[in-house]
Length: 491
Image 1 (cartoon, rainbow, N blue to C red):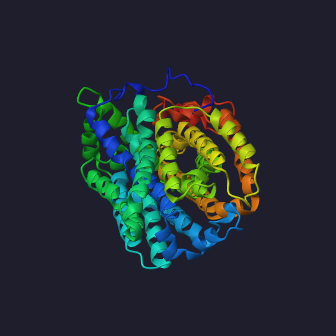
Image 2: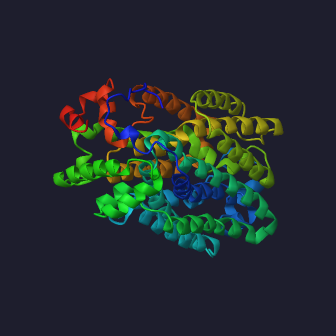
Image 3: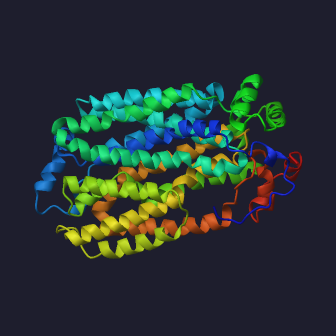
């Protein structure tokens, strides 16, 4: 993250708490991080099945008619609001559920919310796998959206609250790592099931229930977070949860007392978290929880992730070739999650713009151009995985104090879903009308967001959650919004 390193000296004593990385916390974080697996699988599978001819023949036969039309622009083959609704309907449902999930998380805890989300996701998967018409298909997608809305709300917060401060950034990226792993698993399954013809797309959509089942069962066997348990008056359970993740050698009692004290202060204020986050001293939190998830989607990754196989088929790959392109893209994505840089995004988009500018789409792209597009698209996906992929889940979970965390995380996920919905619903139409010019739009946003992060996102590595006020006080811009008295009370 950009914005300069904040010195940690003199910021409370929380750094001493649970700096050791125990086996228990690793296992627990893997289970919680697997919530990203179901989201990633859905992202990967939806783009693949929309290139399968049996699926198109059953639900979208007009797309096949366009493919048979030699005069049809390659940019416009998949331009259909109904077809894009199959993908984007999940995100409008996720928007609604993410706002509800804040209250559910407060009432049932992070663990309970993940379990609820897992069950709803499995029901949606079953409807998709056995869909008889387009409305049954979209209803299943809506239920998938509700499930993802719950799990995307709870899992990043769970990871942030369970991880030791020293390892919080690393373990919080488990969500993004599992998300990208879900995409590559879906890409392989999409390719494998094409041999099944009419049943292939049903198997691909139905297989999403497997990671949801694994995550849901695993969630039953992990403890809830100490912060969530204290919030619900379960102090003894919070103590056991801390001992599980911090180890017997850590000073868990001292950390527990700090969490209880912090919760009592919040409870005494007795303010609604959604009203609280609107106050001036929470302005940095509100701005970043809106800007970060919105910027993530404005990188143009939705075009790559959702419609990768569609894009590859549009530039001359056959059905199998498009799915193989999706596999390559997903593999690059997961490998790139382990590194961090912003530079390639701008370079790749600029070159992609220049390459695509050589045709108006009225003729099939050459095989060589298709391969170049695949390579450059992979570089865009790599840049995203290095930077904006984990950033959306990591930053809000690290900066939000407990009193506004449910509201802040709900706002974060809601904006991520609403921007995703708008872009995914309109992308194929925009591609049809603006052709290669759509990449200029995304390139401009990449430049804007790079400047924004450099100026306004502070470094949070190793900073305990209850000491973030000191970070804001030292930031060149945000310090004007933070109440010095509140920050001093946490020293």
